[in-house]
Length: 265
Length: 190
Image (cartoon, rainbow over all chains, first blue to last red; front, side):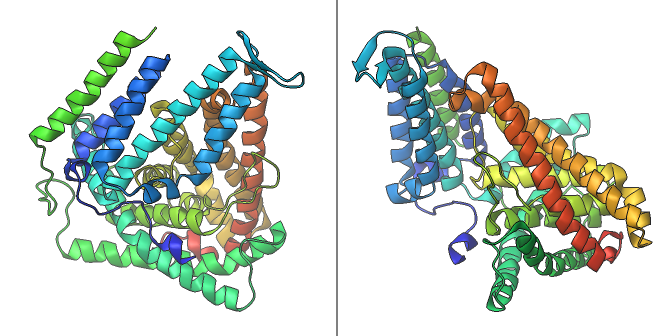
């Protein structure tokens, strides 16, 4: 249970990606998610593979950390690959065992779709591995600032995100304590019939809800007592700093899109 | 929202979204048949829906989705899929809040009809959520899982439909027990 107490996947090491502004990482990943769909042949997927490798290399994240959280996803990628190989019946027959035929299109589609999935997962994982959740929230708040003009409550949303992130470890600790107390009495949360599991959860949830509502009331009173009046004129302890390297990263990702477009068939 | 939501409601939204996230991490989903998942993690959003109504619970759902995205718990295939499955779908759990006034009145008055409306509200919220998972399943997951297009619609419909109804019933049973034990939970002040 305790391994789940580390929430989020941030790995604090020194790297180029760690030093980037969260806004540039968010923008770069958003652009990447769109441009990955441009790739449609071996050359473009090769370019994407080189880009992904360079991105992973520049993050200094130990490989075991990167792949630890992705085991289940790798099974899904292998499953996807096998499904394409077994069920696509287009193009020339490459292998014929009588009961099993592998077609050219099945093999290429299987490889391309699995690679696309793999690159997407690896690159999006880099955001959470190199940026703390609170930095991502600050970055999102800053990027969404223009939405204030249409009265979108950007500051309030960021405030709620920050409070949620602040209290996740506290709630995890509390949940862990209550679960252990219940398990010591013989309650099993992960096995048994639906009825037994439903009955086991109720004594866990009631104290969690009651303490959450009490905590919400106390926190709101404390914030008001300290003069919280919403976003207007509020200063920030954590300042975001956009540097030349952030602009370069965005330009690199945009250029990647251009290169993929040129080599696309 | 700036004028309508008080600070206390905003803090409640944040804490219950965090609680949904924590329950999702700690208590594993039940998988009765392949591709169908029954989970409990919607319970805090439903409780908020019955306590504060549609908008606060929809925002809590959205924040829960954002928490999953920024902590690397989300499955990202496409930006539109992420928005559909982690923002819109989870915000739609808030539909249950449409029944807030009747539930508050009847559950606190200890009427049996209160529990029936609670079940209807939970099923409405759960099915609204899984409708978006069904769309995302049809437009994005079917392609990845190599399910033929004509079967993809039914695959997504059945797996998400069963997950929606199953999770809804499961949450309804637990919330029924919770509200019977502690009905003041949905009163606006404890």
